[in-house]
Amino acid sequence: MTQRVDLATVMDRLAVDEVVSGYAAAVDDGDWAAYRALFAPGGRADYGSAGGMEGPAGEVADWLAEAMRLFPVRQHLIVNRRILLEDRDGFPGDTARVLADFLNPMRLAGDGEGGTAPNFVAAGRYTFTLARTPEGWRLTGVTVHEKWRHMRA
Image (cartoon, rainbow, N blue to C red; front, side, top):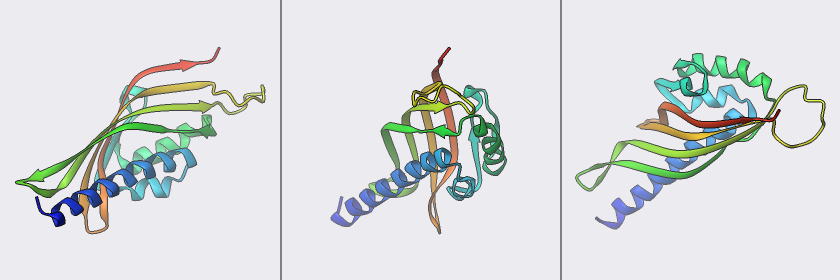
């Protein structure tokens, strides 16, 4: 590989990672316009394994906006990110896949105990698929693979 190809690969990895971080921030902050902007046209999200919906990103954003009202305090921790860039005979391609573990502590609305401990924690793995677009890297799909959850009694 040439230095130019190596640099392009590093830049792509950073840009893809920024999209994943943007996803977590958008959901945690309830910024549904930012959530929608992360997706390419035709992008989809699947929260089925967590008891949610699957569908076009815009419809899922509407569902999330309503569902997340139950949890006004939330924080996605997305770790162990494995970024798999398309390789076209040694050159960067235009698609990527990210496998990343998540831990998502949340606090239920109306919890009168006044503490900071989460009432609900979910964990599992995300699969993000992305495509290079004229606007930069965008999500074509997000799939949640929830592995466990805990709710404080």
